[in-house]
Image (cartoon, rainbow, N blue to C red; front, side, top):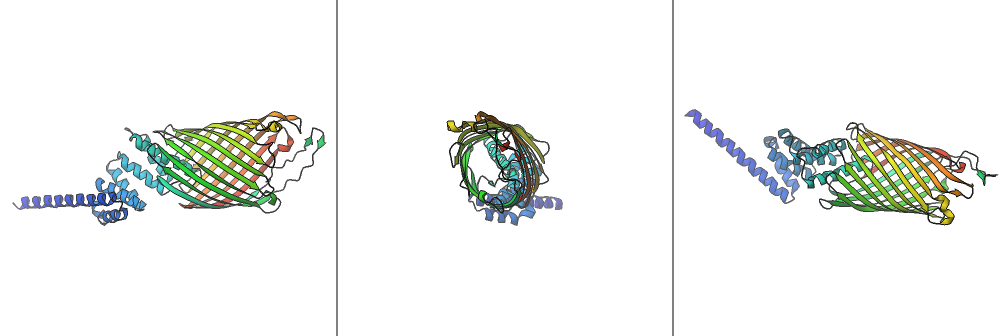
Length: 438
């Protein structure tokens, strides 16, 4: 009899605990539905020590903590759900999103890839949202200020200091005009410089299948000794649409940019681009891109051209921390005027690189690029066609001491050889920068 009473009492305690838990979960769900995220989080946190480990509680508590900005608590909650059932796709998606918000890009990408390769796969709408986040991760890894969630405005300010061994790309070789007359060339003079940059970008996923982005940027660059006439400022506007598929995304940006130098040289660029990215698997993807542009120079119109550029970049992740990419680039520029037809050219190049991420805060970028340009018509001043070969090598170390701060140090070397000695040069640039993002 005594044992039966104890059993009945134990069952009543369990039933009461179950009813209490159900009431707590329903209260949190109600507050969450009313967008009272902080209250929902506080209610869940009050009972956290007793309820942690129950997947129903952890899931609603996790999303409430995420919306309330308590991202560490959200991580723990989603991880507990996955410990209970590692195939819970909603919990893994929210865990990946939370890591992305914290700037843990390596971990976020790993969880998103697990979702893309899961069997069965998430619904099509979820797959498109994953593609959106993968695009944002790619942009952040490329050093761009991007959204931390489905829609946000990012603002950045930056400063850069550097040294350039040959700012105006002067040649060291003898130059003959009309193959007869020696042309006196100035000595090559190095210089130091500073650069200030600012910009803002808005990324917005508008629906399951599409989104948009818009941004503006400006820079001011000044030299300190020999090249103050090359001081310049530039500004640009860009924006466009993004289409999302189950395993692909297509962005169509429109861009306008202008640079004005103190010596009255100006360059205006209007461009329409398309970029198609296709997910292959967790290790590889490829990007097809193309751009139509008009480039106007001042003073004078002879250099004005219409250009078309296209290419393919294949990306392969050797490990989570090491990514290799490379592919061909082809292009064509055609002069707007007959008097400037010797500026028309065909371009063939190769763009390659390697990124090694020590962690989410530190990485090294290596770039190796080659470009060959064959001009279509004889240069009237040198009485022959021009052909150029350019090899560029760059290395940059980046460090994020905090999520919204970026510090980098880089070295870039360019070696440019030409059948016309006037355009043969080499230069090395060393620079360091810091950027604050909001």
